[in-house]
Length: 463
Image (cartoon, rainbow, N blue to C red; front, side, top):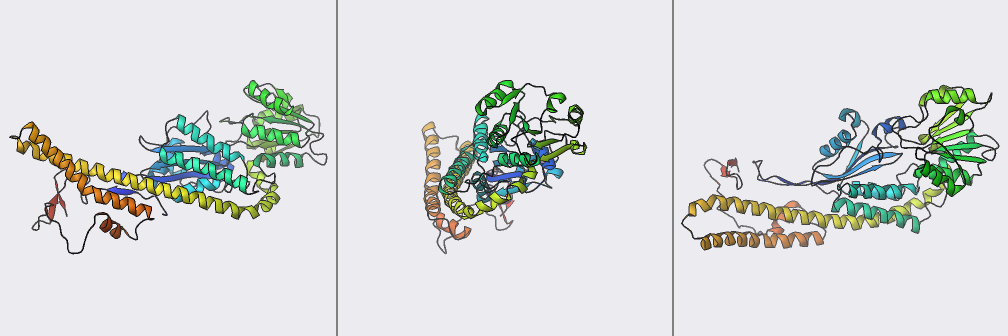
């Protein structure tokens, strides 16, 4: 099964009675498709979630990290997925389509499985993505935007990520994005490294915690944490033995540090050009300030790079720092791919069974809709029937539909369990137990006009 395709059940030539089985998609942008200055336009935070992204009775999970913004959805079409992605983020569709990618069916599932395994990250094998995927699912469940398809896919993806990390050594070497940021800071601080440096980490979320731990492990002489919520900064600082800086940040305080790493989820700049200029003016002569912006959207005004004595790096600069670790991890990619294939095969089989079940449900719903329509047509013409006789007619119609659909239902389930049919025509012949030379009449076909009545709306349509 290569795709979970869009299935349309309808009367050919008539628009009534159209029913669809939605498709599984992922729509997004990442560090592979656009730079940070573009990615930040698509970014969202828990405090500023997307405005929608799904219709009633569909499914949607938003995944946002420093390196990607993705919408996993079960919807009616690729176009609907693209439109929902752009509109929910408040981005013009024409602009969004220049950068977004869209995958469907098994390709969408494979994307998430590879992501959970660390193979789609800026740094191969990094662990932070597992927690981000888990929270994305929890947030969707809390918002009641997730159903059986995405719940199963995300749970299977998390299981895949755990297997890859336990059965391979893909995350053996320290090459997380947080470690990369700390390495850049250490490199920029000169020959003495961090043992004689003061570093301020702005932000006490997952990235801030991870960066602070890495810096502490690199023997930073003086490490401080600042966060808009003092209690969270205090919690991080207590865990690693750092000091806490009160909010709001003041330029004269920033001047005390050799390096500043910012990784908040603020929608605007935390460090403006004016703040940094004032910090430089408060610093001793010839002192430089190393700035590392780990946030998307960015925390630090990119214009500060033109201030003398200020050196700015951002999250995209981390790639060059971890090349060696990535090369050493590459030997573990094939074992990880094998695990992904095994896990994906299990999900694909489940998805196929789920799709067949949906198709059977839609087939029966459609048949019952036709049955009710025909009863509505015939009952006024049988006004002389008693209540008992009318009940018998209704029972007859139900039994007739059930008996007609009994064999197709069994055959569809049999076909699915065997891995599918060779062709659509073969599947139809098998499902309805058709034989050569057998014809069926009574469908209302008019040989003179070439038309027949629609079984739902009774309008003449071309046969």
